[in-house]
Image 1 (cartoon, rainbow, N blue to C red):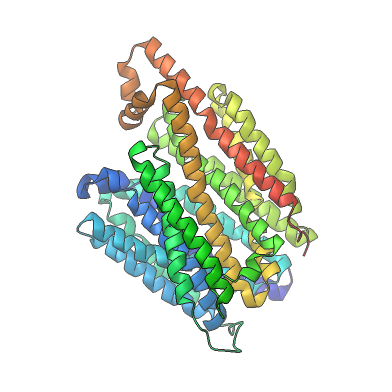
Image 2 (image 1 turned 90 degrees about the vertical axis):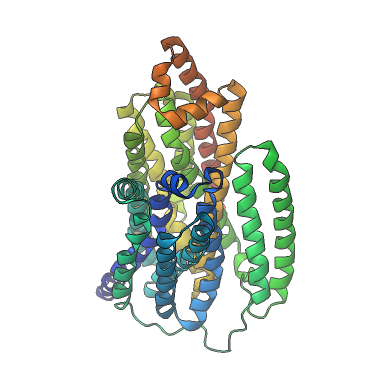
Length: 487
């Protein structure tokens, strides 16, 4: 790293890293507060809208701020995104009922999606492609730290200060981001040749497509037959919206989704790779605590801390891949080599995880996280390099979009596999009581009945690891087929 690049790195990193941390911690810190929110505001069956609303808004914000950043400059828009996010946090903290809370989460999600997209694009704006891998590794570490610390902060804040505090604690972080963002260099916009003709029609149809797809996935993952017609109907509407969106984007002068960019093999394959790997990781993070509590008999606190092994492994893999890109110029080589290893590890755990001692299980979990982490910086730098500076914002928005869709799809797929397997064993009702009541439910059973239940759940949860193995294997194939491999 030259002295000039190092100076730019040190000037930009604090503000961008804290911005990434702020946007990444929101989902994990809020998830731990959901039971308390449901207890106060009511509607346990509707509480998932708190997460879905944020995800839909964040996904829709990504291409909007990607395009606006290319036209008006990303540093300026970063302050706008921080203001939107802070307004959403304050609205959530003051919400008197669940509908108002969901509305405030939409505002917060729009700001959070903008923050993630702008921060990723600012990295590409500050550094040449070969050095971005090293920098992206630090960003991946910030993201991993947010994922690991979110449940801990959210749990203790909810326990001692109430669920509203999980939104209030984000406000000083947003203020710190604004202070640090002043250090970012004011780079002229990449596009200054013609006024922007914003694609309002494309945005409206895109919102419909994303909203229908994510809500359909949320309904489908519950495996409730009464929700099936709604899920199918939303899926059909979403598919029709996608077809209409493609026609609109081809005709638009300034399309929200530049199809020519997304049509490049290096870009769309990198996006699919990201969606598969993130889907496997988020699905595992969502259900691994339940496996640890029901099959291994761990308490909720320690089971949540076990996720730190995956986070540390993922951050280490990102650091490794980023440094190797900076040193050798080789990019896709690293996920091509390590994702097959990760898929193999998940497949092995599907067979033996229930019987492994924890001192053996934890290193394997960290190793699988390491393998997935090698793809995190590579996807971003590959998409940005293939798109070029004038489409840097659009490429960064595509990465954020692919990760959100991958997270939602992966979680829905894992949920479907696990709950179908649990239902097939006939332990569905017992599983729900075990999740709700914890170890006390098992303690009330006869030893033979408790052992039989754990055995049935161990068989059912093999699907958790198997699904992660399949998704990671698909990501490995895509990594092998990305044309752009060296910078």
